[in-house]
Image (tube, rainbow, N blue to C red; front, side):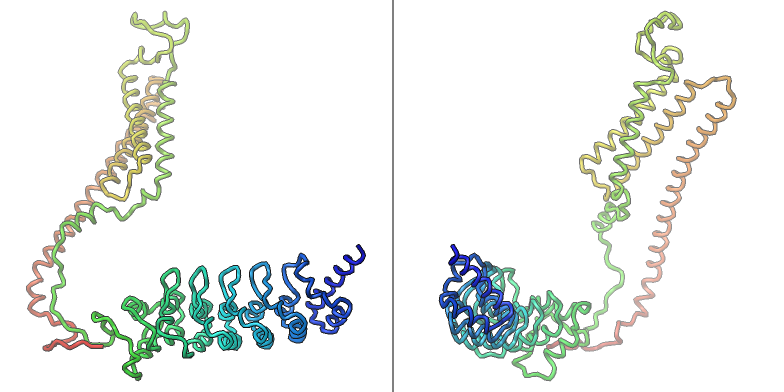
Length: 479
């Protein structure tokens, strides 16, 4: 038991020494237990002392570990990374040299994320480490990451390390097929650079003869001045360079500075009845579409008001013991509206107005629930008509209720009723007149503008000068 605790204490001190990089402590511990490094695999630690020293950059401590236990270079941590992965990512050149001098096969080991040490060095832009790794294992430059199928070139572009990209592309073992290889998304390094708007990287890549520039890539470069310095890229690609390095532009490409052929055309396009019809039907001011939820709420509230007015009519209903009070010798049933017997005409108006309002509200709710779009002008007119009907007849229900329950001898109520009726007659009339005037105004303006163009069109043809002057020859277009 004491021996086991002694081994645990020595192991703990070993890991502490690896954190500090203390070689003297390592030597003392190995003198006490020469098999201490061999017992590392029996511990519960997810990393070896070599992982720690490689991660922290302790060169001397790493060299001493490799001297006593070179097999530690092949040990992997919980993320499948060797000490070479960690040293490459941190850019410790001397440690990378020591690790490679012992074991070069680790260059091709994939970690849990499908990356080899060269990929990690490229992600951090460790140029010196990348050169060491490629020199020790030349095939590593051609290896792609397991999952994204990124080459080391993709990683240089993705993490914007142009100098590292230049070092890789200048090597003799990088061919055109490798330069134009695609990842899982189908993006080459040029396409990736354009997606990430790396202007300097694009300039460099298009200057390489082996980099394949497709027509769509070229269009993106030269027609997107907001994202790229297209003019400088154009000059870099085609001015002052050998013909073999120039980009082959698509046949329909024209430079912005090249002369354009002058064609005499009419300004007035031929009328397109279909487009005019679609523009008329497609109501661009879709303010009602944005208020769909509000329309549903309003329609629901009005429908609830109309329903309550029916089950609770003005004047109430006949109760038990009141059947004998029914006027004109009629038989009045319990639960029926009192006013339906005392003032049948006004009550029928009340019921008709309330029913129309209730039906229009339910129609609006049904249309909105059925996905009725309001972007079409005809649909908007239907919805507006339904809303206007609902509002007008709920207003009619209200004034009818006042008339039914009000005292006919009260002059104040009579004045209020008169003003209310006048308001609801004048407001719809004003809206109708306004819409008619607006429609007539638009029609007159269109007719006047059309007549004006018809009158001046012959004179415009007589005195028209083509744009850019009187060109007599059609200029040739080229690259």
